[in-house]
Length: 178
Image (cartoon, rainbow, N blue to C red; front, top):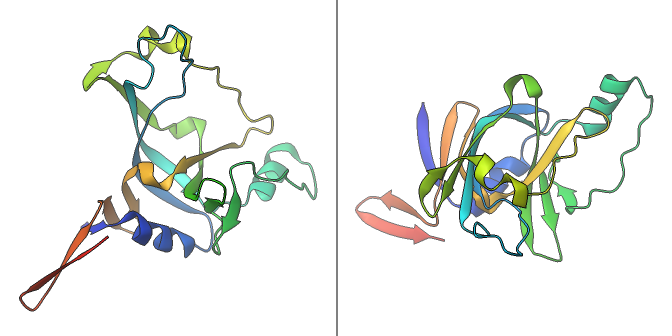
């Protein structure tokens, strides 16, 4: 499998071009949301999630297929506005951030590992500080993650490694793009 190092901006452009539902494999790193008060774990835990997910799926069609409801019209996305052809990229104008919207399935749920100050930790030790997960009432598990949190993504038989800058070598010259 070919591996390419790309910037976040390049990844956004690649994802904007997805035209229909496509399965990808990704690795993302996030800081779980937790209550701050008297929480020794607050902002010190990192969650690394790896798995196969669907991007660019049609949410209305998925809800209709799961529930039998016809002509379902979803509520406005509270993360931001969908952009691009496949609608897997969302832009939040207030925060000036791009998000990847994806769907995961219970049969192949992404796997998460946690570290506390760089050392592995079991979720049970800090779970009481976290909010509770509320499943989607239609059975469609849609989530969004900031594109900046994507570390690796495999799409169309290419593994992309997201880096801050990429060195491009052309005939004895090296350029750096940011």
